[in-house]
Image (tube, rainbow, N blue to C red; front, side, top):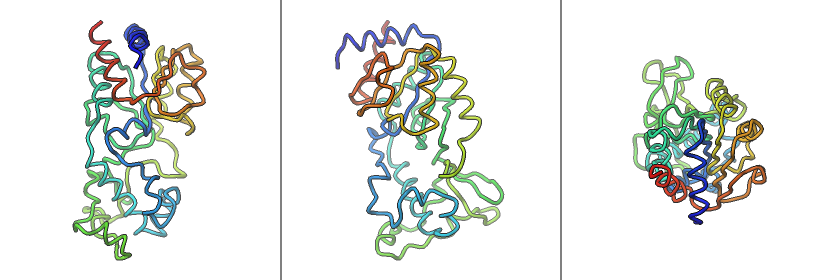
Length: 261
C-alpha cells in the first residue's frame, strides 16, 4: 500500500463532518464467508429462483435447505479486521452512518450500531402468519446429517421451519427477489448520502440498483468518494481515490492513521 496515499485519505476522512460508509459482499469475504453463488453445483435450482416467496410455497425443501445452509455458514465465521476497524472508527466519531448490502450481521457483531441493512438480515427469521421473530439458528435442522441428506436426495425440511407459537411457516428476514427494500433503511441511507461530505465504498461492484444510487447521490452533492474494491466499478472515474487491495488491511491502516492524528 502507498503510505502517502493512505495518509492523504486519512487526513481527508478525519476532517470530514459526515462520513458515510457503504459495504457490499467483498467486505465479508475476508471473514471466510462463502459466496452462495459460488456453490452453484450444490443447489438443484438457481439461487435467484430459490430466494422467492414462490419457491417457499412451491419448493419448500429447496427453499429451506438453501437458507439453512447460508445461516449455518454465517454463524461459523467472525468479523474480520475491516469490520473491527469500522466499528472502532465509529466509536471514535469518524463514521457517521454505516449502510450495507450484506445480510450477515458481521458489522453489528464487530460493535457497529445503527447499521442500515438495505437487504435485511439473516441473523433473524420471522413467522409469516403471526410475525413472531427468532434468532435464525431456530431454523437450523436438529440432526447433524442434513447437508449429507440433501446431497443424497433424502433431505426434508422439518419442525424447525415452523413457528413454535402458531406453527406458521418461518422465513428469513432478508429481502427476497420481488420484494421492495425496507423503507426505513432505504430512506435513512438516502438521507445520509445526501448529507455526506465523505463517502466510502467497500467491497461493492456498484452494479446492483437501487443501492448503487447512493454513492452517486453523494458525489452529486459534492462528497469526496473513496472506493476500496477488488474490481473496477462504474464510479471509479468519479472517485478521489480507488484502492484495489484487501479491505481489512486498508481499513486497519487508515484507522491507525486517523486515530494517531
